[in-house]
Length: 237
Image (cartoon, rainbow, N blue to C red; front, side, top):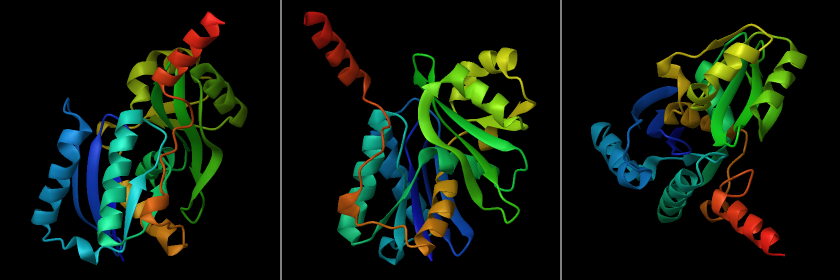
């Protein structure tokens, strides 16, 4: 089984190919360029380096959201375009599940956080079972960082935080978190298409694939532009 993974849900752009449990290639950047500038050239570079014939891919695993509205749209368009052109199905991997899978086998609770602004984070709470299957303790959602910390206090287990929200809310976590915690190191902290592809392979084997044309990103909440439009409309009434 050969899975192409794509993640552009946040600051990171990442492309990877996993075949039968082996990571054949991965290209990840966390720089200032937009994903529209980087994603396709990265895919082309990986394709050349591992001599990949895209027609041999069984499915395309896409980080399906939540995350950056622009990033998700770019990743979605790329995955859908490839799926339609190659007649390949898509496997939708929830962004927070893909992030949590970076810490495969971890004994602590895994809490990925992405900055959603206005003191909110996109987050989920996960554990790995004794068989190392990813288990959702709290499904991904958009919530206030303080509410998240209270939920972790209720669960009352050691937790590892990761994701771009760590840099934004590290001070809040350090001052207010009431359970033992740590932060994932740099090489495990951000989105990786390798994790999306590996988890996507498991989901594909379980039949969780959809036609490319059916894919839509999962935003979880309205965009800033939509919220501002609604606020102005309410002020005018």
